[in-house]
Image 1 (tube, rainbow, N blue to C red):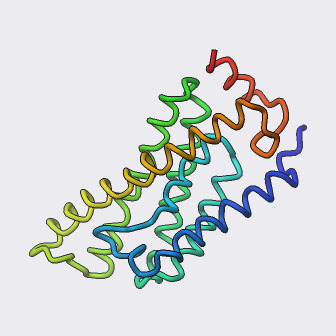
Image 2: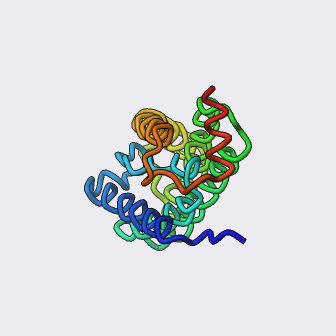
Image 3: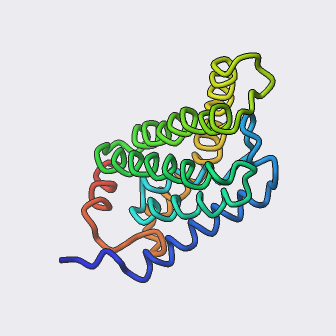
Length: 193
């Protein structure tokens, strides 16, 4: 059986988790506002399309980043689980879809939709912040729509540059972005042609 816990993968996972935390903390309180989250670290949520180690790295990075949240009691475990589920779904899409553009389009949906459904639950129902709305239901849907929009900016806007940059580096054979001659890399090369 091939060793899946290589030094390269462990280092890459640590870098992904650290980047998630650093990019979140760099924006301070505005990374946790709820209605409009300035959180460019969400662009890293496309990395499970390439690297299986990105799944636990994003989960740990999200939980560590949420230690700075004003909703820490709920945001660390629930936000972490939402990120873990989104990362697993993104990884699954990356394994099932062979076309690299469709893979990015579908894989990017999971962090957007899952976070948009879960984060308003924390903010509106568990913490009681109505975000200026009159009812909890209207506050939830206001927060849902806003999070869909801001997540899409980070995942599809900034994440697109990251995705296509890594795809290009893998295509060129840059070893830091490869794990040898795996089946997924061979299928990526076939998808390019």
